[in-house]
Length: 66
Image (tube, rainbow, N blue to C red):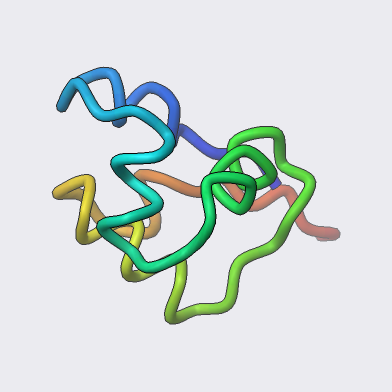
């Protein structure tokens, strides 16, 4: 899965630490999300999208099997 978290963070001038605090996770979680090394729970995906004033579909690009 790819994400646009870094792009959206830049729009709002947020650091990884800032975003982590907003959603209640550690900075490392944001790092792993941005690198596509961690699949978030639906709740975490929603919280990150809300913090970045967007929706899950805009923020996360799912590359599943078809």
